[in-house]
Length: 501
Ligand SMILES: Nc1ncnc2c1ncn2[C@@H]1O[C@H](COP(=O)(O)OP(=O)(O)O)[C@@H](O)[C@H]1O
Ligand SMILES: [Mg+2]
Image (cartoon, rainbow, N blue to C red; front, side, top):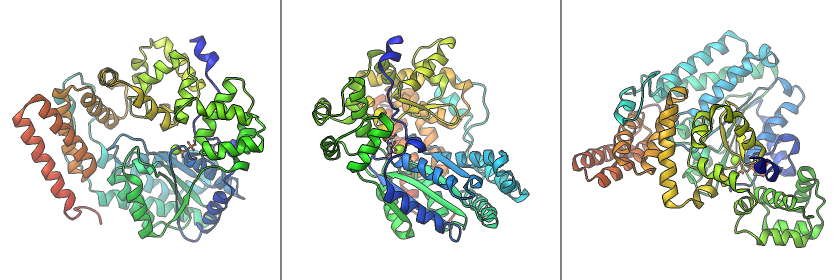
């Protein structure tokens, strides 16, 4: 343990705090121009680029800029993040709602947001979201069998997509109206929409199409596709809607020098900066390189930079090479989980006793490999770290860790507030653990619920898992049922939309 503390550390791979944000002047100017028009017409901007290029950091900085403007302290900034578990039904939008509720409650925005009509719209949207998404009743039961888990899953949603959209639109209108009356702008920020399911993207698209004055909507989208099929679709939709796009590319020499100076207290000469620009120009790569130099006690000369870069295939590999074994082992254990990681599940995966949990989470944060989310859950500091970690696991270890994860979710289930996250995690872990009996039932059942909600992507993904599981089980009846369900979903997916517009 002490070893972990001594050897790791360094500057975190989480998105940059706004005070440490470097460079990107042109992009910030673009954003500021867009922001200045938001009072008159609602404005939407997509920040795009490959992983590690600095999208989330720019989003953080935008939030800061909004609040640093004259009168900006009274501008609410709502922020939410999409994670890579498919089917989390409007999770990010619900997070925005919670954020808005918190803002309304705070004295700073009190005078702006206390209108009765505002609370009314909030309550209503909340209720509609809940009715649409709530897949399970509050439960106290639940060990092992898939059927028991599914037994408490509500049937079709009580309200359709159109109601959800209307409620959210109403809420934004009301928020925009409050802002316009006082000459402020509310910023709505969504990180990583390439991970959003078709559902969430549909809501986003509909919202963008009709964004009221007084609202700036900014979202980030990853262009390189290790995860999700988002960007290609998103870009097409965006072209149709004519919204702004800020594309991020690698950092240039002056920005690299600024980053070295501000975040690592390195003074970097032109030769070293030139090499970095050429070889590791994305901020994640720079962070990996600077942390490695610092860890090894090396000065940032061109030679040392060249040495460090030559020592690893990619930046994530560079980060891992420097980690002490115990921390690596923890990361391996956690990397099969879907963020956000609930603390009880993490504790179970790491085999921690009650008293060991708080010190362990402290260590995870100190290691700079993890970050804490606003609701007290955890995630890898950057998705590239988690992806690298998953990639390095052997097939055998992957199966074993998924079995463990499924078991940990089952054990902790009564302590976890987000039923949908639990169900979807279980469905995924059981399948990846090759526990096909349970995986088939659970994935088939949940797949059907998503079909009822017209989330075809998620429904198909879950149903395909059921098909593969049935094949492994050599269960012909189950296989036929799963295939029937798949055909039904495909049919509906290719047909006209049934709800909303
Ligand atoms: N402009 C910047 N100034 C300082 N640090 C940055 C900047 N952009 C990115 N970083 C750092 O680089 C890493 C990757 O940035 P991040 O914003 O997470 O990228 P993305 O969201 O595109 O994957 C993080 O560790 C972050 O702190
Ligand atoms: Mg990001």
